[in-house]
Image 1 (cartoon, rainbow, N blue to C red):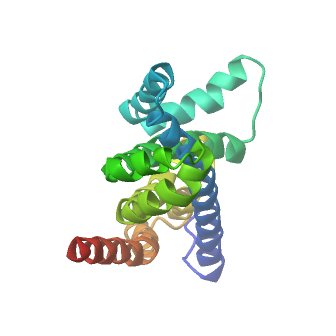
Image 2 (image 1 turned 30 degrees about the horizontal axis):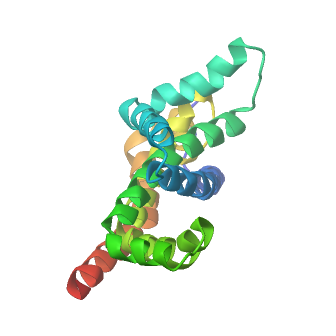
Length: 216
């Protein structure tokens, strides 16, 4: 039966938006924490640790996110671990984000002048102190534009979560479209919502990049 688009349908889209934001925050926060460890390990002196992190990054950057969602959701089910859709997509997006953010922050760490690290070592500062007080504050500042840019890609990428039944904004749009038979209207609204989320972040990323370029 053809249902007209109204307040109820719009509120359903907003429910999907809520889950899109929720998933993005979880993935960015969890991926950021894990990505920091990946970046530090990727720049460690231990060669085996560096190679392990190189492989980790290569796997998650070199395979489709859609496949990673399938592996976490259906693969864990095959070995008897049944996860709800929201938990599976949160894990998959967090792992994926940790690889990308870890690589971004690794580049920022390596962009710092080596003299600063060498001076800290000469002063006898322990590794944790070097990271906390000297390296990471500067590296994360350098990485801000790329980090914000990745957040935009992450928000848009959450639309893939629909493949395992997670109802975020894009999936909510599909459901409403199938009820109203008005795909142009519905996905026009969905696209406008995504634009409203991502455009300010894109502008902020470009502003940060211009600011740091001017400072250099």
